[in-house]
Image (cartoon, rainbow, N blue to C red; front, side, top):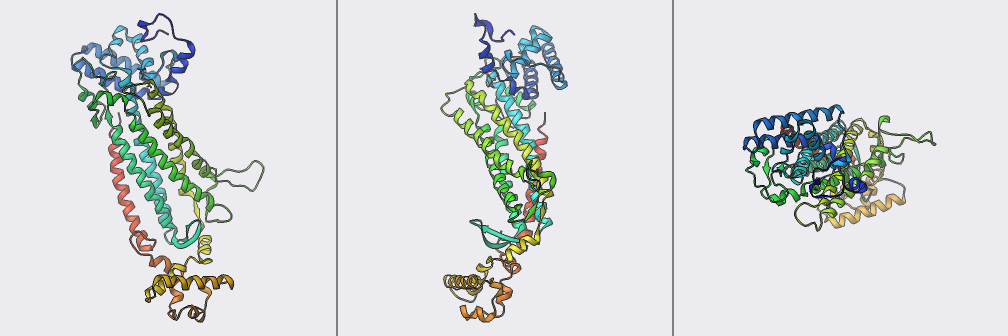
Length: 471
Ligand code: ARG
């Protein structure tokens, strides 16, 4: 296959070098963006008088027939043509003749690959935003379906204070809302148009970059040509968004895995989202949650990979930058899979309210409330803490829970205890009374539902805006 850049060479490329430096095996997935970018470029070249209208029509017709062939599976990508850009351009010239060679006027692969990647990632971010929002909705729905359920809240993985199961689910919701927010930031810095930067310094042709940006629906243009072709920050930011998201999902997964163990038994995952063992017939394993936890490795790896690849690179384009794509593609594929399955898994997860209630009523999670009771009667909190600590010690030694103590026993620890102590330390009271803003009380959690609903509505506006950017 003749090289599009073969003029100054007297020898053909070593076959292994061809294979080594080719990116077609992975960048072919940007064919749509490459063609849309070329159509916008050709349209602009004609509008500015750089090519004629007939030439433009031939070029666009050829590009559209190539697009149709690729989508029909009738296009073979050649390794010898290196990348998606040259595969398409070579085929164009084959189809429409020498005029195909005019498409690359006032353009370089450096700004071409940049515009393709910006367009591709912009589209994918739009799809990921929808999937992320679906997952947030699954957590909100699970919380609302179980809004009365009380469970132990943990610190150090030791039972700490009673909470609503919904409070726990909503913590996940708001965690993911920050991810959505971050994704929006990445979108903004992806929605910038590099085409027209040429190889690095702009072009001698009278191009109109603004016109190209408008056709491709870009919000902004790079103000500097060298920055345009060498910027990969938006990719690193995307991988950083993805790393935080998968880290969050990994934390959630860890809890799901614990909760569906026999020791906890707090939840049961649907059979459809679990797998069995080839040797132990009784097993039902939470493989999805485990695999999601495990995905952190490759996604953090892609982030580190890209940071390392770009570190110390001189301006402007360097072939090192071709390494930017596989990690992003792999991250997108995995996130789409993960977000979709996870939302279904959460929606179908069964909550074992009795197990949770039993766990929280058979422990000392109400100890803080007992101390708060004394605090409200005027005892300095430090002293109240000491009194309750002693009571807990007494209970442990006598095989009792705080709720089992008689009023006389309570009074041995402090004369401030009265009849109402019993009511003050039921888990229901513990939850109801944690009514500070953002706390676990029923009222505060109901407030969180409302806040979440508003957030989802605002997110939907953003998603609709992204959808309108489709090409
Ligand atoms: N395949 C290349 C990449 O992905 C396209 C740009 C190549 N430019 C060049 N001057 N070699 O980065």
